[in-house]
Amino acid sequence: MSHTPHELQDEFPEFADKLSELKASDAHFARLSEEYYEVNRAVHRAETNVEPTDQFAEEEMRKKRAALKDQIYKMLSA
Image: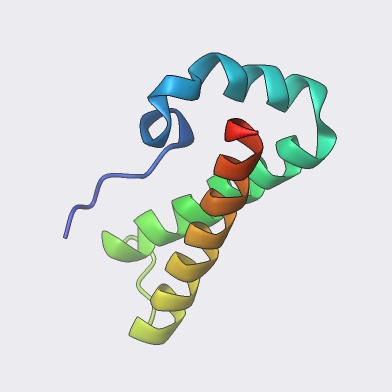
């Protein structure tokens, strides 16, 4: 398992400009990306045992991160 954070700009390098553009112009997109950032950081802290958590909580955070990523991708690719 990789302990590298899954930052949006690394996940979607082909949408780098659109990420910045939507964060500045679309409040809903900005909220989604901020929520993704917070969940992603929590997952990373759990994976690296900076803030250990139980397996089920970590799995739920990963599911939430994946759902947010899917929503963000839909908006980027629209």
